[in-house]
Amino acid sequence: MAHNSTNNKQIFNKARVELHLHLDGAIKPETILYFGKKRGIRLPADTVEGLMSYIGYDEPRSLTRFLELFNYYMPAIAGDREALKRIAYELVQMKAREGIIYFEARYSPHLFANSNVIPIPWNQNPGDLTPDEVVHLINQGFQEGEKDFKIKARSILCCMRHMPEWSAEVVRLCKKYHNEGVVGIDLAGDESLNCGTKSGHCKAYEEAFKSGIHRTVHAGEVGPPSVVKEAVDVLKAERIGHGYHTIEDPCLYKRLLKLNIHFEVCPWSSYLTGACDPDLTKHPSIRFREDEANYSLNSDDPLIFKSTLNKDYYVASKYMGFTEDDFIKVNLNAASSCFLPDKEKEELLSTLYDAYGMVQSTVC
Ligand SMILES: [Zn+2]
Image (cartoon, rainbow, N blue to C red; front, top):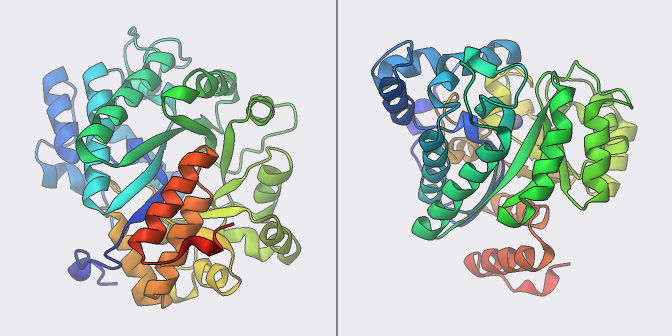
């Protein structure tokens, strides 16, 4: 499919909100090269084009092969204080340029650390950067970015499905940094690894629920509806990352519509990871729109998918028939289901209503 020629054409030139975005999948290639060189860490190439030929792609491949790509560049960033602050700061700049006024970016604190983490990721040597300090540094980068680019950035901390041992620390950090911009918890990674009711993930989500920490879970992206069911019923997720395969279980889907569970849809990502039918005119978001489900459009990992949020809007417009009104609805959905405290959420919604020239009386 020839998507690239029109990649830069701006679709929906109004204020936007993005809820599903991975910090480690949204780094500038220039920054990876800079830190690779500075730290003497070998990368597969030393130019942006060369590096992108390894880590970016535009034709579908499996989710497992997608996950392997992080191995190429994460060693240049993980374990470095300056790099972490800088990628957070630059993400705010990137998103401000895309017309986004509020976003929530997610990451695993453990995957950026080289101390107090077993095993140490990315074949790093042991160091002194703990998951706790990772969160503090990224918060600082976001806060500096917010000041300079006048938009709002918050973060969600990820548990990793293959590492239930890390999850207690993840929820602890969510609580500790609640007032420093951390608004929720996520569960990411290989969906075929079930939680089990006594797993570290379940305990962490139970603690999050008790402590008023908001919850989202990657589920039903490539996995079956049962993973979505577990996310909602066991982990008490308020939002589902992707959730495309929910519609294969009509009973569950109906229940989730009633519960107003939010689906964080990532159209271009789902094409490239093979999560959905490669024919984008059959994408689950068309069904979500028809059923007036609560869902949003998001970019997921724009570094690897060589995209911006505009690419997702472009795909939705060209292949799924999304109109200006649909995009307005999608952004209002995102604002309504964001993890900000109520008062800030109301402010965000008001800003959007103003930007769209709408009267706010219908907000509930
Ligand atoms: Zn994701």
